[in-house]
Image (cartoon, rainbow, N blue to C red; front, side, top):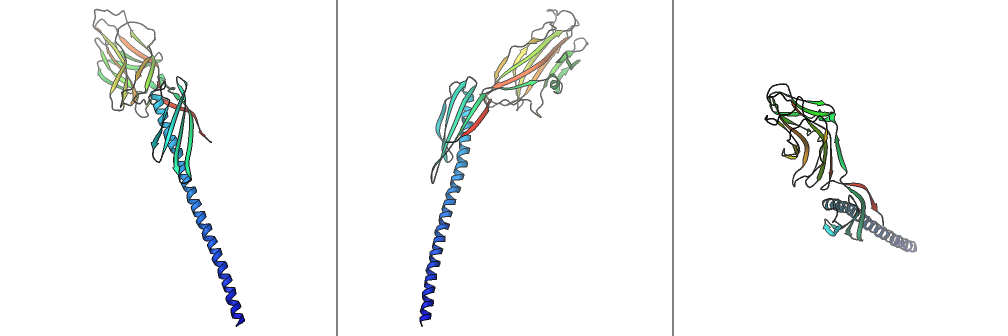
Length: 300
């Protein structure tokens, strides 16, 4: 009888210990689960906050590139699950320090991330070698007799030795791959050299003749915009530097080609016209032409 009571007492003590151990394990598991959930939520919020800070930076870069002398920032701007605030400090007419600070509320409090960047306006420049010009396809619109070739370091359009010959058309960059990509609101500067020559004799003002040439920007939809034209006739064997052309891409337009158009006509007196281009350089700035020079995340 005593042994039975002892066994019952021992079983009760073991049961109590087991209950305590299981309770402790339950509390520990619950605590770990809650902590793990909070950590996962915080990590997700941290990632979301960083992406939000990136969005703020992108917006700041775009807005500053459109108004580099007046944009100083904005915010707080609500976006997604949080907000971002952008500040822009002008370092020079073409460079700014743009900071994006993002905040996302979480269970354990607000999560913040900050990105600081140095941004340059424009600076993109494309020089077009003569060898590349030779690869541009030529579309002939009308022709009695004429040629397109590389002569004297430039691309040449020339009437051949046929009386009253005509040669009209254009040569332009291909679309695969695109040589340039200029977006709406982006300003460009175009520099190049050209010459127009009557190969024989001196032009006679009394004789009708045509020696026209244009530089055009062509959009992805095929629309062309004449940014420079030269229609005067003269006999000058020297290369001339055209004044720098400044032009802004119209709204809703993307430019991806440069076109050199020509319209030549030989007169009956025998003068042979030719026009040439070389050293074409295009640089862009403004609009979407801002580039990140350097960036870093600011660690508090």
